[in-house]
Length: 399
Length: 185
Image (cartoon, rainbow over all chains, first blue to last red; front, side):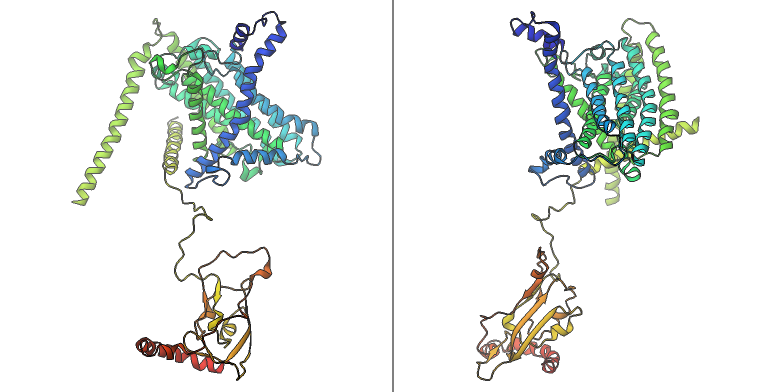
């Protein structure tokens, strides 16, 4: 927003003389419309991708009928959903029933505010960006509980209760992991976190303190998966047990809003994960030209590419893993992720202050990067050796 | 503690194993058949829609009697002596005027039993299976034609000099059917 404000005051003559509230509102319209576009059009892409990936993973084709390769399928579905009647179940609390999907959408939508798409492309560079993301993403829990309660349906209420328990549980390991990042960077601002990872692939936080931060990334990604109710953590909507969980009673546009919120949240979680661990909008290569030129450069492409990669992994996981039981879900959160996350907080905190070297890359230089390189090389060697050994064995058997 | 670490490791490892399998399937070609554009390769003896060549029917009614669901309706009466002699393609003289030959495909059970007794091989199953209609009565196929062009002379007699050899092996096939055919009408 600061960027558009500066841009407008440079381009438009007399922009500086406008009253502050009007100028800020005008400057906010541009990022807001970009976010709304992402919000509204993103799910169309994600739903298509999800159905195609699901199809390919099950040796099917996915949607093929509407448009070439089924490209217009989700658009047709969206139009269908928009024209469907919104049904209010008997005994439903109508006010809450309408507010709930809006709240869920707002929760997902607000996360976009701090996602940095480039050095200038950020709706607002909040000083408490990380904290804001955590706070806002739990807003959708309120919406889910509201939806479950207002539906006057036992399945919806079950789903809502489960989602509340799940999101509250998984927020804790996620926040612990955020804490490790914040300790390394010393700032809660997402822009500062991205800037701290400049220099290419080895400087990403994914590869800091080698065995530690990859584990942290796994924990954060798992917790993020749980927070946007994706398989294997989709027990709030568990279609085989709870019909559709909290959105059982929703139809038409309200249902579409839940859908939109889910996919937007997926993107936001992936974008935040790539900002925290994968260098955000920075290119993975050390050469400057991969970053592009101008005030924007290739930043958005890098960030969206990384985020879409993680979204793809989410979809991949969805078609790989079965759903967890409720007790397994709690076991994973409280007995696996949380203890490991706590240990990581302590150990990473210790590594940040000790040894007290100038650049803080002591561990990485002497332990982390050599270990990573050794592991990658031995993995490659193992793969090639297995290939060679297999070929030799085949030849021996043939002879 | 050790058991816990082992469980966690096993959990992570098995997830990776599963992901490897789905990754492999991501690149295996799909088994879907895009039906109206691509079609099944049907076996040559597939039993689908019945077809009947009216010009060859002698009206013996054996097919109607063989049908376990009685979906073939035949009405035939004696040809007047004044009308010219007509023949089926295998040389059998047609002595009955078949005025009605209806097959109700909505009742048909596709058992193929009707085609075996036919002495002139005029009733057979085709590999055509796309005959769904919106109206049930459209499944009643009326094969009787008013303007059928019958063979006016015996094809056996005509082809006798050239086709004597093939006619001879065909002869033993017919006799088992002809006594029943004689008993039919």
